[in-house]
Amino acid sequence: MLGHVTTPTYELYYWPGIQGRGEFVRLALEEAGAAYVDVARTPGGMHTMMRLLDGEAEGPLPFAPPFLKHGDLIVAQTANVLAYLGPRLGLVPDDEALRVEALQIQLTLADLVTEVHETHHPISGGLYYEDQKSAAKARSAAFVRERVPKFLGWLERVLDRAGGEHLVGGRLTYVDLSAFQIVTGISYAFPNAMARMKRRIPKLLALRDRVAGRTRVAEYLASERRLPFNESGIFRHYPELDG
Amino acid sequence: MLGHVTTPTYELYYWPGIQGRGEFVRLALEEAGAAYVDVARTPGGMHTMMRLLDGEAEGPLPFAPPFLKHGDLIVAQTANVLAYLGPRLGLVPDDEALRVEALQIQLTLADLVTEVHETHHPISGGLYYEDQKSAAKARSAAFVRERVPKFLGWLERVLDRAGGEHLVGGRLTYVDLSAFQIVTGISYAFPNAMARMKRRIPKLLALRDRVAGRTRVAEYLASERRLPFNESGIFRHYPELDG
Image 1: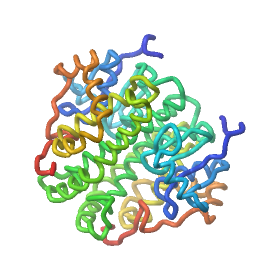
Image 2: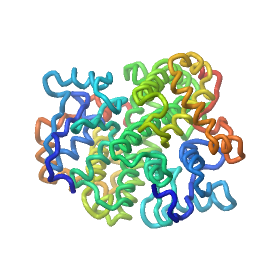
Image 3: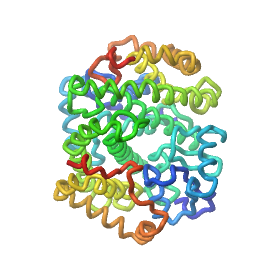
Image 4: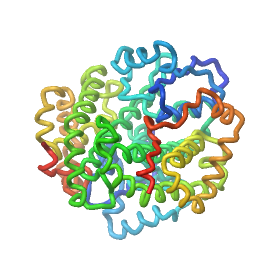
């Protein structure tokens, strides 16, 4: 646990206005009660973020937000940020095997998040949704039919094998927080699909509720720091895609 | 460096018949001269792999191949496998900041690999390419126009900032091996697009050649262990997608 030694304030860089991939990092920082700045949501912050993306700082060049700046270190890629923050925020066990397991689950959640994004942008991130709507319908139908059951069914099973309360190591980790976000996001974007899944993922839904009820998470979710879901983010509710 | 202490043989599990994501792990094991078994390519190996995917072993449940079995530990997700193997095979520096940087680049390469897969399967992995060809053409056009220059241009820049010889820490890491595989794969799948990129990524092409010329890598590439690229894998050459 490095969480209680003096540490520079964490600077999170992510697109303002959407939860997106930044939200997985926000949830970890909020649950831990860490001092952090959501830089791009502060005055002048977007400019600072764009300069870092342009390579102004020395060292690792992020490909895209979210990235974290901690002192001089820049850490990009959501799962990598969480693997870095986990030990510092007390959100992953010390044991190497359990850290490896946490990252493995997190990376599978990241794959799922990417697939969620592809449901509304199957052709190109550079086109509007409206310009790829027919491909989006076909992709979403396959996603809801094949991928949601496969991913969430797998997650339920991982949870069950781990004792049913937490995904890794019998205690709260950043992976549980991310699972909360995924289930909440898919419920927002695909309520019909989730209604059909409900009875197959009781432990996962209970985990989501337990995370939402944690003191700091609940306080965060009720605050203005929690952006609402919207149709600029990754989890978008388009009724025509939720068959 | 843990590479020289006694360690159980590494068991790699991946679909036989394609390079796919397994190839990033194979390249690391081959470069290090590590003792490993490519299990699903041995008699009965597919059956063993399917049993592990079905959850027969205790502990972490892989979502999909590739995964590594090392003693009792199962490690899934390509980048996670490489982060686990890196210190053991001497393919990543000891320094935490450099390991974080290595994983960050590897995860961005993983995103690129996923996007390559989406070029021929933009609607569903459960459908044949032939049944999603028109969406594949649209997706590939956007990929070649926007994404290849963005990803490879970024990689060239990362390499340049790191001194031009290696991507991380001034020495060979698993990330260099993966960059070799990506450049080689995209050159196979999209030769026209790569011909247009050529002059913009001289350092990256030189890195590819240096990796290909390393003693153990060259020996591996010439062996039967190196599967050829084919149209069942991730990097597929469909002339109609290479505008």
